[in-house]
Each structure stands twice: as structure tokens, then as C-alpha cells.
Image 1 (cartoon, rainbow, N blue to C red):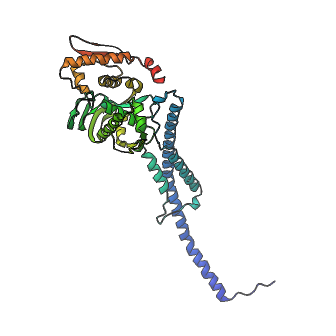
Image 2 (spheres, one colour):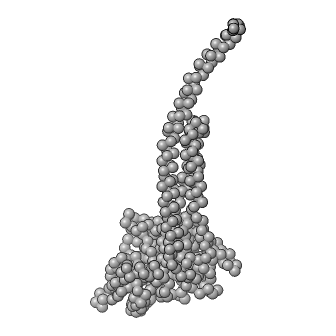
Image 3 (cartoon, rainbow, N blue to C red):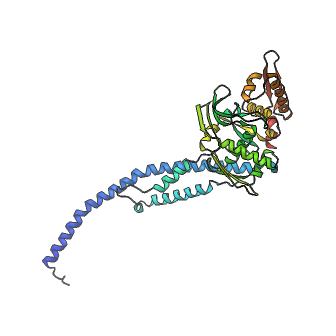
Length: 396
């Protein structure tokens, strides 16, 4: 069968179309090569980000698992449990969102021909970058057990929380140097802090440890009073309010030597708070995320909270915290201890008598084995109970 004749005009049109396609192919090939080059450049960076996030996710999951295991395996009395009004914001929701984002990005990466490009030929991965930055910014305190409290060593080894009694007038200090051990410098502005303020601070930090530092910590005033062994009376509610107010309305500058070098913190001990003065008296407190500087592995001590609750003497509480930060306590003169604890005793022999009574209390509670004051040098030496003898108390 003969093919139909093709006119010259048609032949000429087809030749022009063929030339246009031939001219367009090199341009298309260049654009494709540029896009795939951009993919090769982006992939290593994206893989590094994915690996970083996966490592961070695994670390945070381990910490949450450790916290859960601690809460579920420790046999505690009801009075030792955290306050019932706590409202935590767990990290699981954020981690699940990040994992979903990473999974979708990995799927998109496997289908390279469907990846989106901007005008410069770069991949659009702003979502992953934002999630990575969010995870890396999470700051959280160490997850110690429920029957202990985290106490920064610089605070325990100074007179920042003094041993003056509750009924004594409080001083208003302005950039006052606080007596402390060698290697620690503290300057304080605000109303004088005492051992009851330290009780509240230790409990607030304890509640904040199970969520990112800087998030709100919620509790009821009743639960806070019960956890500290205070009466649930109107004066105690007012005492709690004043303690939180003092911890907020101050400025403290701390410099101290740590195993990894010199460190420092400047700011308030409590950043802000809100409360509802109703029947439940709900409180919300926020701590400064920069406080993490005081809780490095070599900068804080896990204090036996049950022992501290049994000590009603402010001096006994201070000595308990002070010697808890020393694995092998060495001798201090009575006069030195008087300055370090911020005692207001006018005469040294008055302080010495109170010191003897406080040391006897620590022996009764099983924290110290023995103590003595050298009559010639006036140096106080103590012998702490061994770690094995303290473990049954911590795990009871």
C-alpha cells in the first residue's frame, strides 16, 4: 500500500520541530545535572542531622526510662512521694513528633525524583532543621531518686543559707560577699536566706528534674508543706509564700572551681512564680535554665532527704549538707565553721556549745560515726558513716 505524499511545508515544519528538540536537550540535561548535584551536596548534611537527632532521642529515652524505673521500683511511703499536684510535660510527645518528621524525610529522600527544590536548586528541609534545634536546646537536670535532693556544692559550702533561727530579724544585703570555702566566691543581693529557704529551694529543684529545665513546675501548697514536714496551718502557708518570694527577689553571683575548670552563675534562684489563693492553693514556679551550671557531675551532691527532715536544728541541717559534699571530711576550726554557716552567735563558746549538740544529732541519725574537738587546736574532726551503712536508709 503506497504511503500518502507529504507536502514540502509539512516536511519543513517537522525539521524545525526536530531542531528545537535537539537544542532543548542540552539545557534540560544541564538542569537535571544541577539538581542531582544539589541532592548529593544536601544528603551528607541531612544524614549528619538525622544521626544527631537519633542519638539525642535515644539518650532522652534512656533518661525517661531511668526516671520511670526509679519511680516504679522504689518502695516509698506516701509522705516521701512527690507532691500530688505536679503537672509535668513529658518529652515523649516532642520525641514522637521528631521521629515522624525524620521518617517522612527519609522516605522523601529515597524518592529523589520527587524532592522539592527552590530557585537555587537546594532541598527544603526547614522542618528537620527546626526539630533538630528544638531537641538540642532541651536542658534537663540529672534524674536522681525520689528520696534524695540535689544540692549544689557551692551552696552547701557557704553561708548563703545561714543557720539563724526563724524568729531572728533578717538582714537586707546588697552585693554582700558570702563566707565560703576556698575556691568558691558568692556575692548576694536581697533578703537574707536561711535553712527553711534552702528546704523550699531543694524541693523546687527536685520537682523540676523530671522535665526540661525552664518549664513551669506545678504543685499545691499543701503537698509542698507535707513533703517538707511543715504543719499545714495558715502560718506555714504564709511562710512558704515568703520563702518563694525571697528566692525570687534576689541576685546571686557564684563562681567556683570544678573538675573541668572555673564555672559561674549569675541570676535569681527562682525565675518567676504564679499562684491561685484558693482552696487548693495551686502554685506554678519556673527556674532559670542557666541553673544547670550548678548541677554538673562534679558540682552537686545527692543529699539524703529523709535524714534532713529529721533534723530540726538549722545548724544540724547545715552541717549535714556541708559534710555530705565531702567524701572524706577533713578538720575545720570551730571559728571557721562559725563563719561558713553564717551563725549569729556573739561569743565563740556559745557557738561551740550549739555545734556539739548538732554533731550529736548527726550521730543519732546515723550520718556520723563520731566527732571530736581538739582541746589544743580547736579543730573539729568527724567520721562519716560508710556508704554501705547509708544504702539501706536510702533504699528503705
